[in-house]
Length: 303
Image (cartoon, rainbow, N blue to C red; front, side, top):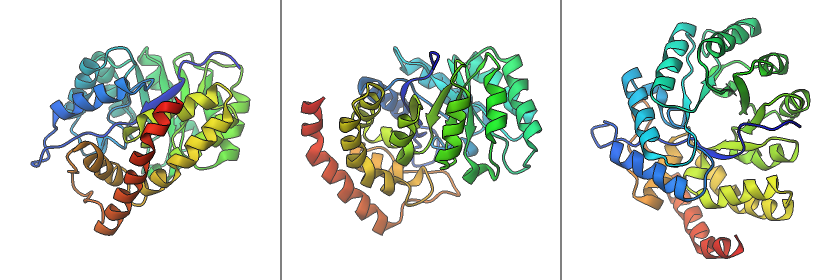
């Protein structure tokens, strides 16, 4: 396999809101600094976890600028997609101007173009914006799968350098890995429950939700696998399993914002129509976090 431009753990960060639902930029910058200090390999703002669907375009760019300002040594991979090609292109250009190092581009949602339309949108942006770009396939949100043939075709473009796979279809993901091995192209997990299985078949990292809450443990798991220590990686994968399940008990980012509130004092506020985590699930989440906190010293010593 050729070298890949994306390797390791890239938290898909939340966008913190004040009680009036304005963006809490001070908390945002603090989150970025905390994650970078924990050893993550990059930061991904304004994706699904960042509630980009409820941000204005100006807010979207302001968040990218704040993250770029806060990081010291890791790349910023900014969400910039849309179901409107002109809008996606304009937002991608603004993200580049804001200082993003790479782009994460969700496939068009709702209007459900044919595969040739998907390819044309990605190529249009890749031709116009000279940054590394990641194709994001999440059919549960978009209503449509980006098929392996389309991904393989896109991988030949020099600016399209990655694929965030959140289809849940390990066979399809394996096929993409197999067919892009001769390209400078990264396959990244977009599903925390499947990160380790994906690494075992050739993925090179993850754009992760759980890393917002357990960055050190997630980094240790992914890098153990990348270094070939699958015994250690499996141990950490199973340690994280209850938290991963708890973080997807309701629509992301509802649970992860609650977890960060419980763990970091992070504001739990979301923008409508998302609502705060169900109280019963909140209790379950608190218990999972307490168990992980009890094991934190052991993880630190082992690493």
